[in-house]
Length: 192
Image (cartoon, rainbow, N blue to C red; front, side, top):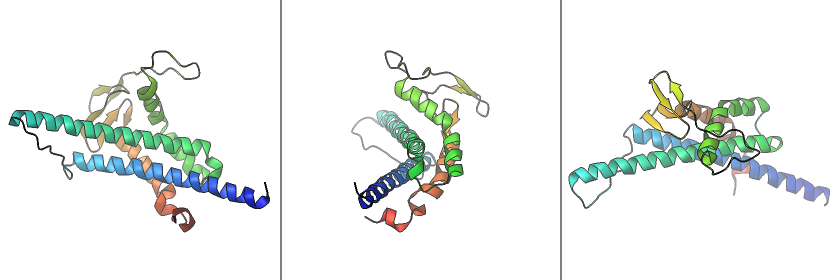
């Protein structure tokens, strides 16, 4: 491989990694912001069902709960992906080490909760994984106990999963998006 080919390959790997991180951050934030707008009644989903009124109300609660859960799962997945990109592609990123480490530290508990959700009910323990069992965590503010597989939504700033208030996690992801999202990238990384 010539020096030019190696340089081109490095540039392509860097661009793929930088754009991948920006995409994960943008999607995570977008999904959490949509969830917040739904919880604040700025966005409403109402099904037009052909059934009795009391069934419509019940079905609308179920539909909205499913959408809320899907948005949370997407947020968690993409935030965890962003952490993984930071861990595995640190030398290719345009973000300084301090910003990366602050972001990774802020999302440590999220990674643990995600792993429990993803693998906690696997039929057998994986030899290389740490103990993936859900545990109860008391949230002092609301006086509620939540494990990692539960989702308790008390409002747009009170979204609990295990030991985490996901709103606080969102704030960390949003801060990192400001330095690693699409708006922070040089033009050569955002041009088609």
